[in-house]
Image (cartoon, rainbow, N blue to C red; front, side, top):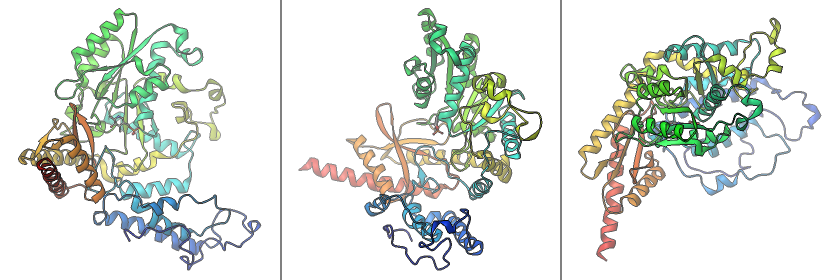
Length: 511
Ligand SMILES: *Cc1c(COP(=O)(O)O)cnc(C)c1O
């Protein structure tokens, strides 16, 4: 089932049940897009569900990733289809041409970047949400109430007041952008929405660390403030923002006539998992009267784990917080979230006064404010349902234990690295990310090749990053399916590939 790349059009006759249509049927026969034969459709639907449950149950037996064969890629260059295809044939194509060639973040050997593994419960909730086809922009409906329930849980988890607002978004990139926009309203007033930032004559400046995610600079760009107005503050040896350097830079900008308005601390940097000293940054922000934002894309949900939560002390003081349920929370993609302490200001930043006046106190137009008043999206899907299912099904205790376990696994990998003379640890392990490398001459090149070999072999999928100018193998243990034996396999494979490269290069030198 793994290999066998298939080209398009090879599954004629793959549909004994004739699920949807004879290709010859004239279009006027079809009144709706629903199946004509619900019984046959149901049988195919059950096979599709079984296939995805099999995929998850037996995922260990698969390679983490495999390169997409040329013919498979080519199969997706077909012309716009005019005639219907059977559901069974499309299902077969999915199984043969799409499923085997995904990035593999559901696999326990996936340690690249910071991707969540998903759960079968989340998958089922996605199916329910799609079946309902809810548009959760607003109106008086339970899907909006489910989102509000999750907002209340998030407030409770991060010790925010009842007046705080929250919103599901695609991911932390969007959540960070929303935070910058609300902070812009705080600094320049709601008039900035009509007049633009230039009208106020202020030159706003923002701050984050050198190790912060690039989407914060992008948020400054998209907000019209310019990425140059984001100051990248140096980090200390443990990859956390240097609070002294932050204070100095703010003072220097004030002397130069700029208005510092926003500081973003990171709870779990994407490279090393470092957590900025949130309480220290919060103190500076309060003294300087600038907005205190936390990019907690993956790390914020560490609040669920009693042993990790103390590292996040100060997060409860944030003016805004961005994070993803789809990373450490294991909710299927996508499920980003933004929490804003001052819900009224959040509302002022996005609500359209004209739309607001049309709201009613009864009927379907009741119950505002609505989610669409808190962000740029009007129509939006039901991300809250898969999140609600995940939190209800596991409870915070089990989710927290899973998060703690990924950190324990990272410490286990760190110890394995420290035990191996051929390996070198390149950064402290604060949470669940381990950066290390195979020692030797031309180490950057060798380690880049080792990572590509690992990925192509399908054994494990770490990624690379640069730490202090050195290319590092970066293993981010986010997946709840990963266990110690997966890390043993990773280390053994790195040693094997690494030693092959060293021998090759020493032979090359001898020649
Ligand atoms: C993943 C990540 C982001 C980006 O989040 P998306 O959901 O991919 O948009 C931002 N910051 C940090 C620290 C991250 O780990």
